[in-house]
Length: 289
Image 1 (cartoon, rainbow, N blue to C red):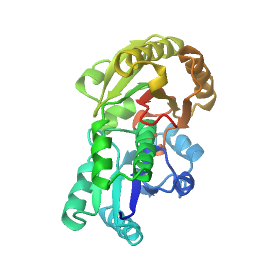
Image 2: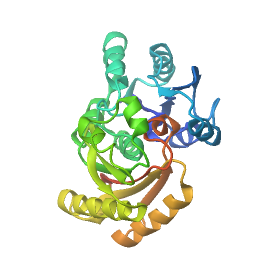
Image 3: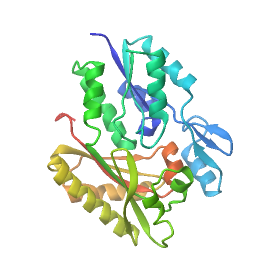
C-alpha cells in the first residue's frame, strides 16, 4: 500500500513545530493587517497582533494562495503517493471549496480534500484521528469517508466579548447579529456542523461559563453517551489565565482529566476578537487516545 500524508491548515491550531512532531504538513492561513499580509509565527506574533487589534487596525483574513497550496501539495507528493487535506469547515470559509477545485483539476486521485466541518480544537482532533486511521492501514478514500462520517460528532460553545469582529467579517447569521444591539451581555455562540449561530446570552462572565458547561454536558450525555466517549477542550483568545482556570472547572464538572487547552490561532482571532473563551468536545474514535 502506498504512503499517505496528512495535511491541514493552521486554523487547526497546529503550527509548524507541532506539525513536525506529529508528522503532518500545515498550510499557513494568511490575514491582512493594514494592507500587509501576515502569517502567525512568521512576521507577526500574538502580542503585537492584539496590540494592533486594540489600536483599531484594519484586519481581514484571506484564503491561502492557490499557487502556494499547489506547491505544498507537489512537495508532499514527491515523498507520498497520496495526501488527505483537512481544511477548516466549508461553512466558515471558501478555502475548502477552492482546495477541492484545485485537487480535482490538477491532482485527481492523489489529493483528497475533506470537509468534516471542523475548526480549531475539533479540527486538530480530526487530524489526529486521520493520522491514526492511516497508521492502521486505512486507504486515503477510507480515511476521508471516516472523517466525513464523523463531521457532526463534535460541538463547540464560544463566549465572545463583542460581536463587532464577527459582524465585520460576515461570519455571523442574522440571528446572531440581532443580539448585537443588546448591552452588557456576554453572547454565547454555537458551532455544530458547518454553521456559527447564536446559542444564548448571559449577563456576566461567570454566567456565560455556566451556560457553556451546561450546554456541553447535555451534548456529552445525549449525543455521545457520556464523558468516557469524548475528548474535551478549552480554547481562547488572549486570556491564558482564565482559560487555565476554566479548564480546571471543566475537569471538575465532568470528572475527566482529558481536557486539552489551546489558544485560538490569530487567523481565527481576527473574527472573534480578543477575550473569547470556548469549550468543546469531539467523539472519541480510539480507546487508546
